[in-house]
Amino acid sequence: MHGKHDLESAISLVFLGTGAAEGVPVLGCSCSNCQAAKKSPRSRRQRASLLVQTDRLNVLIDVPLEIREQLSRQDTPKIDVILITHWHIEHWIGLVELQHWDRELTTGRRETFEVFMNKNAYNEFETILDPLLRTCSPLLKEVIRAKKIEEYKPFVRDTVKIIPVGLYHEMPSTGYVINAEGKKISYLLDTGEDIPQETLRLAQGSDVVVLDCNFEKRLSEYHLSTMGVRKLVDKIEPKMTYLSHISHRNLPHEELEDFFIKSGANIMPAYDGLRVQI
Image 1 (cartoon, helix red, strand yellow):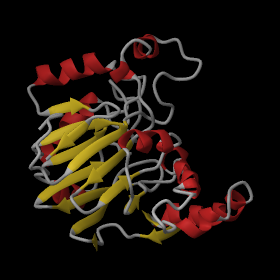
Image 2: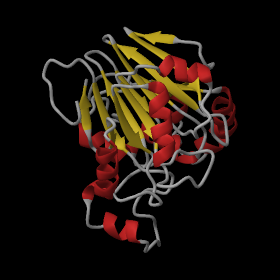
Image 3: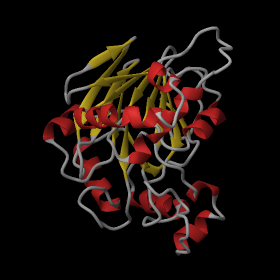
Image 4: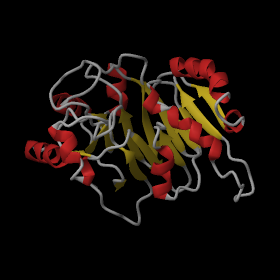
């Protein structure tokens, strides 16, 4: 499954960005990991975002500052559903880029975007929308259709079932269990180890789970380390695990990959631009 192209596959996962809040390398930082990232393309990380593509639907999870560049690399003609995990700025600020989507109307229509978010993020978005509009085009309000979701209350778009699930973070954070084409993908970040039991139950046996792996060693209860990843994988028992939201306080990509290969588990760090087909 890792990085292979299967023409018969119905679902693609495209890791648009795999970095933590500060990206890698970090501005002004001369640590060994940031220095390594200047030499290793796979260690250079924009902020985390994932594109889930079925035959009929494109689902975007989180919208970082770099989203214009990330999507332009993929030649993505449309986005059907946008899922926001939480209100930390790097997970939603790229929404302002949507005001520029196809300004010349080459498709003959003005696109609108369904943007799903938890109650905390929705309330914050409603508060900040008018100030944002003073710095953006009024089109921003026209193209975004913000919708409030509840944890563990599924919704369906086309043939894709999406279940918002609770995570453990310093502010309300929502993961997503996506069922499409007979496959289950669980996107669980930002989070620490203390994930609710109902989330673990729903993610159990996922074909792919994507986990936060901010740190090499545990530095915060609100993010996962390499060992925290191992603990959750043992509980969820997915077929394959990919790691995202990786900071410069973790290992460079090649070293992190070697660490998990030696562990014998089906765990791999993702990198920006990785395409996985299920």
